[in-house]
Amino acid sequence: MRTLVVMRHAEAGHVPGLSDRERPLTEAGERDAREAGELIGRLKPDLVICSPAVRTLRTAELLGLDAPVETEREIWEAYPEELLDLLRRTDPDVHTLVLVGHNPGVHQLVLGLTGTTGDGFPPGAVAVIRLRESWAEVRFGTEQLVEMCHPDRFREEAT
Image 1 (cartoon, rainbow, N blue to C red):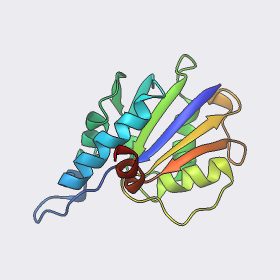
Image 2: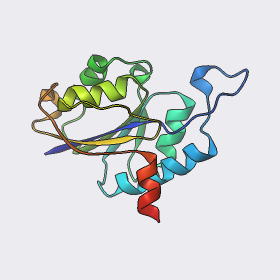
Image 3: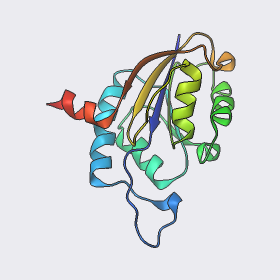
Image 4: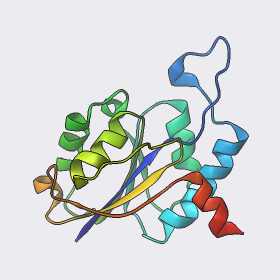
C-alpha cells in the first residue's frame, strides 16, 4: 500500500518588491509547518517533493522529516493532471510520498484522486491519501482520503 501526503505550503507573506516565487513564510506559517511535520513524521515518509518557490522549500524544510527533499519545477502552477503525471513517475520503492505545492492545483488533486468535495485547502493544509495501486497506476476517483487537516487542528492537538 502506498501513502500520498499532499500539503499546501504554509502561510506566506506579501513583501513589496519580491516576486510571487520569492514570498517567505510568515511566523504563523513557520509554526504551522513545524506542527504539520509532527503529524506527517508519524507516517515515516520516504521522499518529499516540492516546487522551487521559497515558501514551499521552507515549508518542506520546517517539516523536519527524515526524508530527502527534492524540488520539482513542474509543481509550480501545476494543474491536477500535471501533478498526477508527476505522481505516476514516482520510484516504486517509495512507499510514502509528501508533495508540497500550491493551490489550486494541490486541492484539486486531492479532490480528483479521492472523488470527494471540499470547501477549501488553506495554507498549511494536509491531506493523507491511501493509494489502491502502485504509483504508476494512480488515477482520479479511485483513491481513499484517510485524513484532511488544517493548521488550526495542529494547534488543537498540541494543547
